[in-house]
Length: 405
Image (cartoon, helix red, strand yellow):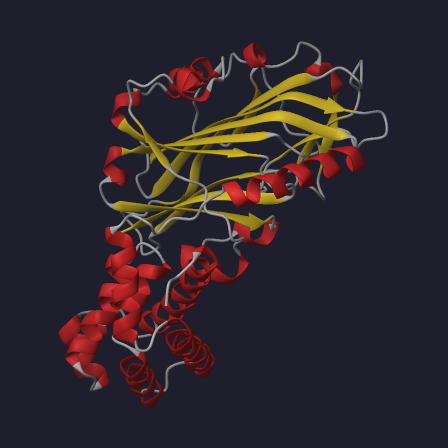
């Protein structure tokens, strides 16, 4: 049968569910069972099945790849039976059986057999048709933006977010993230909430009010959040009224003219964002921006250190905003169940390319250069990944994941 776009979205999610279940079982195996031969010997399992399962972990970029790489329904169940015989965590066994059952149901729904389904997917990939169009959803997102803007009395023309990711220069056990977040032409009506800038990691949980600094800040060894005067409306700092602990946000309620659109640009320095994926057991990093105000356009760029890029693959998704998830390390496939059916296109931007010309955002190049100057880094040491979304969904988070080999 011909597979349409909704079929591919469904199958992709099934593949991610299956990968997450398999990953969790493999993680419970002892170190000597993490290789093909070691796993087959310790589990007393088929060596070919073990090889294909490890290929799923190491070679799949999305759920459709998983479906093409797994050994099949019977092979998966044999692996689960072997793991159960070794008294692996019962809840993980149950989750794996449910994922396998879902997979088997999809084989029956979308192909006469597993091999037939794989051939269909391989054929689509050869024709470069395995993609997810945003055009059908764009009109719905536009209507969602318009109704949210009218209901809330707040909106923004653009959220421009740029992240730089590299190993911490002084302690390579950590992953260092520097970011500039600019919300432009923000409109806050009289009936609306105050303007707020959130940050999700809760670095200052006991602060009475974080230090709001000017653009004289320089890269340091501690977490820092500051206002960038050069790209911010002149009266924003005077409008600052305090730090909200419950929402982890800076609150700006004393704006001189609620009806006048303004720009608000912030810089973040997080030297110990997470463990360095090249030096730790945790092999996934994520960069995200939350749409906490109805927004017409989101442009998000991640400049990834080339030492990271050569060892990683990229995934993008749109998720419901969840503070708990933002604060916890997790793999891309672990939250297969909580991603919306939208797949923003990821573009690789050449280091010599003008982002201002590419996006038609006048100050884009200037903000990127400001961030690199602040971090004392050169753009040609990084690979840039970009997404550009019209009418991003309000109260969601757009995330870019990097999984490391």
